[in-house]
Image 1 (tube, helix red, strand yellow):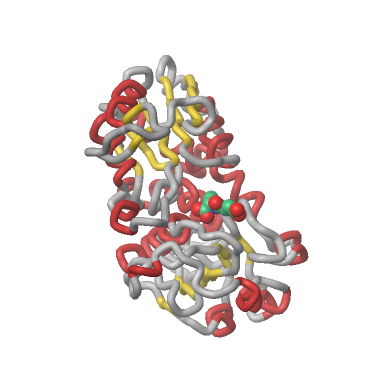
Image 2: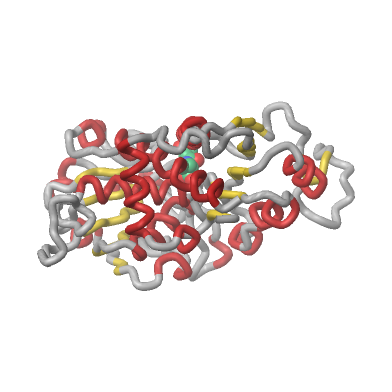
Length: 336
Ligand code: SN0
């Protein structure tokens, strides 16, 4: 694997889940695979889980790790071509990338959407520049439009907690029990957030063996490139009925129907607090598990009682980030 951005990059999902289970049973099984191989993690944005879990994954595989926080000590980087660099940016990404590539074997990239220019964000400009100019395998640690390490960890978590899924160890293939119903729900937030997490979650759930429903207020339609085939239900209560997993996330306007609204918050969040996932919302479900990628703002996305309930999976979900990153790095190392 030379690049990891989309679910297709991982190939067969059942095989990927089998590898995840193997790693979870013995996370040091491949601890010499990465000997004398260096991972460089480049962060253009903040991180807690991605940074820790990906570094831990690399250590599980015996790799060396370098972390670069571009905004904390590196030269400010220009990303556009054709500009006169007379401002605060001292170095161009087109020199910085091959230099970074010369010190490492694998590169992970965190570069959030700017949420100003939809075409620039959705072209994954920064990520593709790393692919092209670093000369090394690269993987997304949340880029402008996707967060595949999160979506893979979410899928691992759903497969572990599904009683009815064919992924469940207890089910045999002759048993046609119902597939888990997984609901992605928009929830309010005071800041404009990217669509990377919901885009990837939708893409991965549609590739997996689940019934998948998306619910959000009108105007927040995600890009069909990620959601084609999903059921969109604007009535949040209807969407929640019979759900086995509730996956909450805020995202700003994806600009699908009105490009001029790209990256905007469409309504004052005070008027959208009825979308916050609380105990009443969870009572509409089939005693569903609550999920969120974190960081989560309590009182906005979810209430304290729901996130603290025994049915909440936010901590095991975050712990599975180490597993998804170990599988992805292992695949990259095995194909070098
Ligand atoms: C990021 C996002 O894409 O929504 C990262 C999620 C893994 N989340 C935030 O930036 C939250 C920031 C905030 O102020 O709550």
